Structure formats: structure tokens, C-alpha cells
Amino acid sequence: MKSSRYAFVTALALVMGTLAGCGDKADKGQGATAPAPPKSVVIFQAGLVGNDFQPVNPPANTVDIVTDPSGSVVANLIRSTVAQTSPEGDTNTAIVRMTPEDMPAISGKTATVVVTARSAAENGSPSMRMAYSRAGVASSGWQEVALKPEFADYSFTYDVPAEPSTTAPRDFIAVWGDPEGKGRGVEVSRVRIAYYAQ
Image (tube, rainbow, N blue to C red; front, side, top):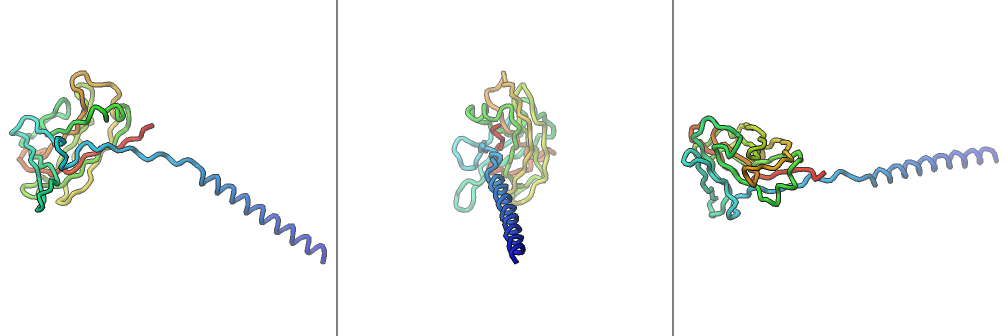
């Protein structure tokens, strides 16, 4: 009887020790450092004064304000009659420039550009093209997406060069409202850039 009781106590001790070890491992796992979330910079937000897209070479490209029934600004309407253009330089589309404060943080990083847009309610374009450009240095090239009638996020990733531009002080995001040049439009409500600090 004594030996049976001893065997039971020994087995119980082994089980408790195993459970304690598992607890230590779990504690160590919980204490592991999670990767930092990406930082995000808003380049354009509809309704902010002085933050609108600028048309290049109007009237071939135009930018108008879109409001809702209450009068609140909800988007920039970008139309284009340009059927061929380069994503280099200032492009021949509509552009929104970054602030000088944002550029040092993004330079040399892998950035994800997110454009919130929809096909225009009237004479809407079936697609749009987007690009990230640093004049005189490099460009992401055109990224084409099919548009929906409701607002949605469209994104692409680009390795932003570390080399600064000698021809323009600020990088920009270009949006080509109608790549077929038929004057149809896209409504853009927001542009942001996400990147990892390290």
C-alpha cells in the first residue's frame, strides 16, 4: 500500500512539472515582441482645403469637386481625354504632391499606395491608372485597375528610391482618369501611403 501511494505521488509530481513547463513556454511566447504595424501617411483627403488633385495640361485633364446632398465634399472628379502618356516627369494626368515632411520618412522604403476611388456617377470610367513618381529619378510605372460604382480601395506596392530628385522638390501620386482618353471620370476620395519604419 505504501509503494502504491509513493508511485501515485511521484506520477502526480511529474504531471505537475510538465504542466509548469508548458506554462513557462506559454509565458515566453506571450512576451515575444510583435512586429510594429506599418505607418500611414494621408496624401489626399477630400474636403481638406489646399489638398486637391491638380490637373496637368488642362483642359485635356480636369479636376472638379464632388459633393453629397448635404453639401459636404466627398471626392475629386478626375477626367481625361489623354490616350497616351508617360508616368515619368509630371505626367499628363492629375497629380497630388506629398509634403516635404513626409518624404524623408518614405524614401528608401517599400511603400503601399492606397487610392480610395469609384467610377464617376455620370460618364464614369471603367478603369483608372495610378503611379508613384519622383521626377527625374524613378517611377512605379502605371498600375491599372478596373473600377467599381462604389468606393473601394485600390493599391500597389513600390520600392521608393532613396535618391532625391534634382528637378522637383516633392514626390507625387498620379491618377489617370480615363486611360482610353474618352473623357470619362473617376472619383477619388482619399490617397494614403503605408510603409514600415524599419
